[in-house]
Length: 128
Image 1 (cartoon, helix red, strand yellow):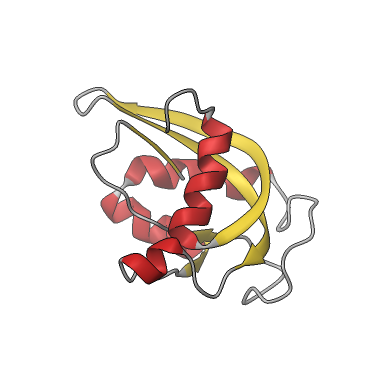
Image 2 (cartoon, rainbow, N blue to C red):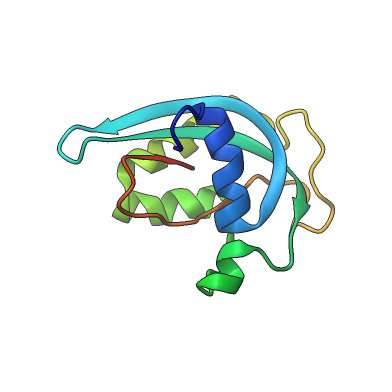
């Protein structure tokens, strides 16, 4: 997060910069902390309204965007980041496929929730 920036604002900015998507910020799924690394992560739902073809990180550092069905993201995260998988379990159990919102028509499957991943490092606080 930038100085004086709220977690929700940081989430919207980060997903735009790192994954090239814009959207409407939804509910906070949870906050988790890693005391050893002095690291706090806020996890939100974002209803995607626009997907950019090219974005800052894709142009500058060649970052790729990949979409996962929630079930597939959970399986991958359980091996590498089990705490992140817990938040997606909450999402899967706590809402309908679109959480009452419409989704962008050019996503792979309009009847499913998707997770996009964008890695960062060296930040005191990250938002996904």
